[in-house]
Image (tube, rainbow, N blue to C red; front, side, top):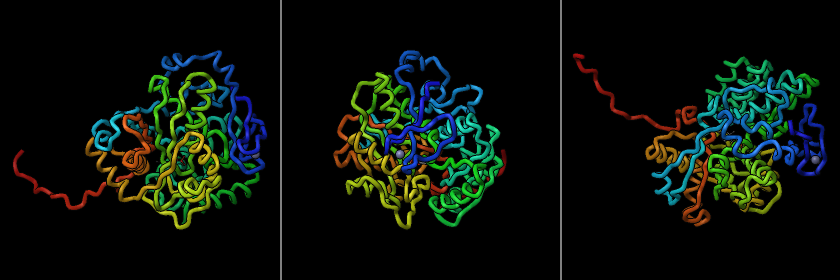
Amino acid sequence: MYLTHLECPRCGREHDAGKPQNLCDCGSPLFARYDLAAVAEVVTPERFGLRPADLWRYRELLPVADPGHVTTLGEGWTPLWRAPAYGAEIGIPDLLVKDEGLTPTGSFKARGAAVGVSRARELGVERIAMPTNGNAGAAWATYATRAGLGATIVMPQDAPTICRRECVAAGADLRLVDGLISDAGRHVARLVADAGGALFDAGTLREPYRLEGKKTMGYEIVEQLGWQVPDVIVYPAGGGVGLIGIHKALHELRELGWITDRLPRLVAVQSTGCAPIVRAFAAGAERAEPWADAHTVAFGITVPAPLGDELILTALRESAGTALAVADEDLLADLRGFAAREGLLLCPEGAACLTAARQLRAGGWIRAGERVVVLNTGAGLKYPDSVDVGGLPVLSPMSGR
Ligand SMILES: *Cc1c(COP(=O)(O)O)cnc(C)c1O
Ligand SMILES: [Zn+2]
């Protein structure tokens, strides 16, 4: 294993990666750091193509020492689809959709869960707890059970019911809260404090390895494009783990000498009903203020006070990116428009990225001919209500065979 230590991106303090860790004393999430010079000596980019089609193909850049501790359901290496019909219509002929809907548990949260659970198990954790908007809870409950760990999951009662069912099916201790993910977070903090070390807080960015799982999307996009970077990557930002992770991955690839290009411009997409990052970005602020009365159909990005606000804003500015809020009615229209042209049913969060790409192209921020990758972070099948099928004619049965 090439993991050397954990580092605080805010105050620079180093932490021991050999035991379970949460936040730095200064309150910032921690980053896993590797001996990249040593990695560059043992593996070259061409080697990855010979390995299994999952995220563990990047094992030198992941934090699990013993392969026997890897808990996997085949997550990662999702397809990067061309979308020529829809792309041409919005003026982005080179539009690509990375389809995380094919990931186990139906969302890209499985990447973070696979790596986070595997490392937690390796470090001797026996039970994890977390607040969730649904998909993270479903993924972590699934992987925890698979790894022989217990899971306590707290989610808003309005979260998609399928996620609730996934947690219950996986045998998790599921609690519902009348409120938002931030309210669920306060319940988890209490449970963890009361458990006196028996419960490990695996909430978004509160442990360093979920990020490592999600960063593999960045490696995959680059490898799938023949070790080239696209011009723009559009991401639906809730807690922002995927965006921070892709940014970290790109920096690692550059340090490894595997990409030399300038980095892609990263775009954080939020909903007009919950846009703390967009507001902070527009104001030039370093931190985001909590968003009041958060509400959107894109439940995965309903995060009123993301813990990683500073890291998301840094990634956007460093990459010359931007942040944009889109309305529910627009993202639902693009979800339908995309499915009608490309045949693929996206999740609302993925559709929000299309709306953002369309608007950024119309406004000239995305230029003609640029290659744009949009993340579809979950399976459209998990959100059946995003397509209205009321009013369809019902035929009478016909006699005969
Ligand atoms: C969690 C989630 C997001 C947001 O991911 P973050 O890492 O919290 O920014 C986007 N889409 C879906 C479907 C999700 O489940
Ligand atoms: Zn610190």
